[in-house]
Amino acid sequence: MIERAVAPERLILPTGVPGLDLLPADASLRTLDLLFAEIGAKKRLARIGEALGARYDHLLVDCPPGLGVTAQQLIRGADLILLPTIPSPLSIRAGDELIERLGSKRRGPAVLPVFNLVDRRRAAHGQALAAHPDRPAVPMASAMEQMAERHAPLPAFAPRSPATEAVKALWVRVERALADPDGGRPAG
Image 1 (cartoon, rainbow, N blue to C red):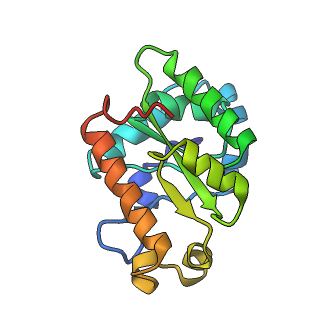
Image 2 (cartoon, rainbow, N blue to C red):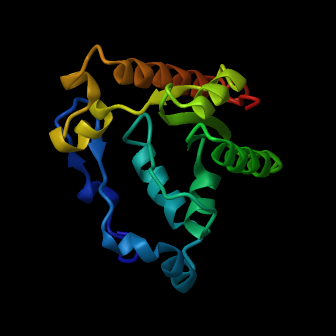
């Protein structure tokens, strides 16, 4: 799609969940940073985002960690970045450094750090949650892993699970941050 400039609309797959479609990744995305360097596609992702933005209320992009060429392009076009972080000292430090780096840019997107894979039995996780009580937290739960097996969202098979409630609460925070970008900039 990126290299051949195929219209993204042609590659979208319905998910069976009303209002949720998927533009799947493929193996060619592994070398996307190199491809961008070769074809000089500084604004290719922005054009794809604009085309899809006219059709959808929200575009969610899942990308690998790091600040390569692809991530930098996605950051430039983002309204909000969800930064999943394991509640451990090293992960928190790395996340805080990224937030500081992004915040140093004048008009960077809001960043919402989110604790994921939270195991409240672990002392370090409990300490991190206590130190950042306003940060959304999504538990480590077998229900989360079952989504891939079942090809279904949490509410479809675990409507009352703690993981479902955590994701619902996270989505409320996302909507609030998108409605008020300055209000979506948590201090950490």
